[in-house]
Each structure stands twice: as C-alpha cells, then as structure tokens.
Length: 218
Image (cartoon, rainbow, N blue to C red; front, side):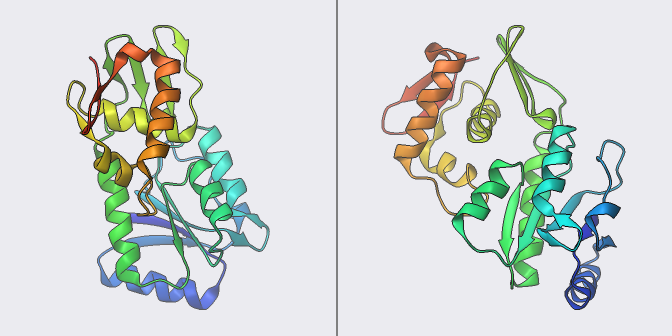
C-alpha cells in the first residue's frame, strides 16, 4: 500500500510516516498545498491523508479540485477541527472519511483499510441496473440518457442499494454505511433520502421491505 500524506507539521508528519512504515505502508509526504498533484488519474497512490490547515491553502480547496476532475483516489481528512460543520463540509465535499487529531495510529490504519475495501467493491467503471447507469469513480448516475442531479448522500445511498440489485438492504446496514464517521444515520433521515431518490429515479425502482429495509429493482 502506497499513500500520499499532505501534512505541514514537521514532527507529526515524521511520526506518522514512521508509524505507517512500521505497518508496511509506504508514503510520499508533502507539506504544501501547492505541491499537491492536480489529479490522480495515473497515480501510484492508494489513498490520500489530507490535513486541512496548510501554510499556503486549505485542504478543502484541494479536495474540491480533485473531485471536480473526477479523481477516484480515496481521501481521508485529518484535522484538529472537531466541529460538526467541518466534518459535514469535508464529507459532503467528497472526503471518504474524517479523523480528528490527536488519534491513535491503529484507528487511522483501520480507517484506511475500511475505505480501501469500499473502493475495491467499486472497481467496475460502470454499473448498469436496468435503465440506470452508475459510474462510482466519477460520481455520476444516469437514468437513460439523463444525468441525475443527486446530492452526495443520495448518490451514496444509490450506490449501497446498487451493490446487490434485487436484494433487500436493511436499514441498519444503510445507517452504518452512509456515514464513514461511524456515527449511524437515523432511520428518519434515511427515509427522507430514499423519498428524494425515488422522486429522481422513479418510485417504482426502490421498493420497501416493510420493517426491514429497501431494495433496488433491477
């Protein structure tokens, strides 16, 4: 596993690189936003560890730039900012996970592995389910020839249902998967997102298994 570490703190960066190396994980370390790559289409990196507070810019700006170019490498945001607004901004902006400093290296490595497992299940460039076409790496979904305008949470919900079309996905499973912070999304919120998604892709394409969960109709 080879990571890109973008972190300006000298002592913290050295310690983190050493801890990763002890786990058999190699990394390239950058300390400035200006040195970061424009995108990751031909990258050797499996994951990016991104600090938000950089001396020449903000990590949120880097993240937004990468997602505009449909860069598919997973990004884990590292920051001392623990406020809910910052966490939501990072996740809605395209981060795959968010970890607050100080943290245990074991937790970070566990989160890296979890994020990579999720991406491994999205290896295909296109998923075709009936008239739906989903491109996980480009954050795109189409119904026929029409590109759907989905919020980040709606897109993630569609992905989770599309992993196994025709199979009921329990609300409890969706609750855990929809928030990589590990803070389960409440069922009422899931129902709102399902309602919005039905309005955009057609109510007949998502069935309710009463008391259990939802199924995407192939």
